[in-house]
Structure formats: structure tokens, C-alpha cells
Image (tube, rainbow, N blue to C red; front, side, top):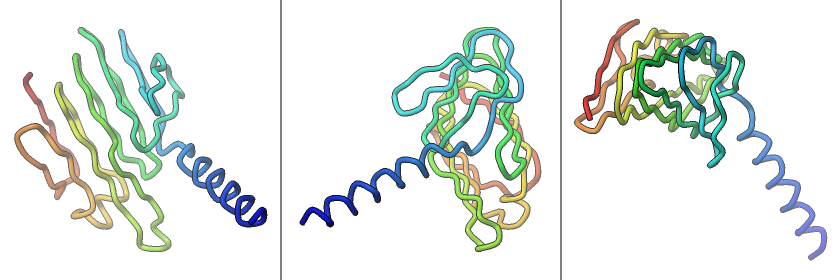
Amino acid sequence: MRRQLLFASVLLANLAQADSVPIGYVKNVAGQAAVVTAGQTHKAEVGSPVHVGSLLKTGPQSSLGVTFKDETVMSFGPNTELTVDEYLYEPNRGQLRMNSKLAKGSLNYVSGVIAKLQPDAVSVKTPSGLIGVRGTQFLLKVEE
């Protein structure tokens, strides 16, 4: 029994550590912006990590740029909220996926390796629909 508890503890610790691995980083920020991860809000600064489940937010007259591990670049305009719901980048194993949700605001998306190798593995949800990424760049605006 004790050995099973120890194994479970080690397994949970490993899972928590895997979730803490950044999938991208803030590359530029102007004005007020934040990265909210696991309920913790942090002021966005150059080099701030982005994780699966992170909410990226910008305030009025603000902007934010993020580069992901696969070289995908997302740039956000004022009053934007985007959540990175799913991100898997293991090209050697053929495991590629990036799904996010734009609740409001504007997004300039430039494809990285995931969309180039497997375009159907990338999507952006909006309150009114779903965008499947099939090209290399697009602009998106969601009105409140």
C-alpha cells in the first residue's frame, strides 16, 4: 500500500511538472497585458512563459506578441482575450495539435511548424464559429 502511494505521488508530481513546461513566450508587449495560468495572473513581460491553459489578455490601447515552440506567432490587439486550450508539439512522433479560443478582441496569426506539417491540427474557436487553419496567416476580430 505504501509503495502504491509513493508511486501515485511520483506520478502526480511528474504530471504537474509536465504541465509546467512552457509552450511559448511573450516576445513583445505594449500597454497593459497579462498572462493568467492556473488562476495566477502575471503582468506580461518579454520572456513571460505561456502554458497550456494560459489566458492571454490585453487592455485598452495595448498589444501583445507571443511566439510558440513551433514558431507560430500570435499578435493581439487591444481588449483581447485568448485561451490556449491545447498544444502538442512532438514532430518526431507525429503528434501535433494547437487549439485556442478567442473570446474577444483581435488576433494576427502566422503559422508555425504545426500548421505547415498538419494544417488540420490547428483551430481557433470564436463565440460564433470555428476557424480551421489552412493557410499561413490570417487576421481575426471578435466583437463583444
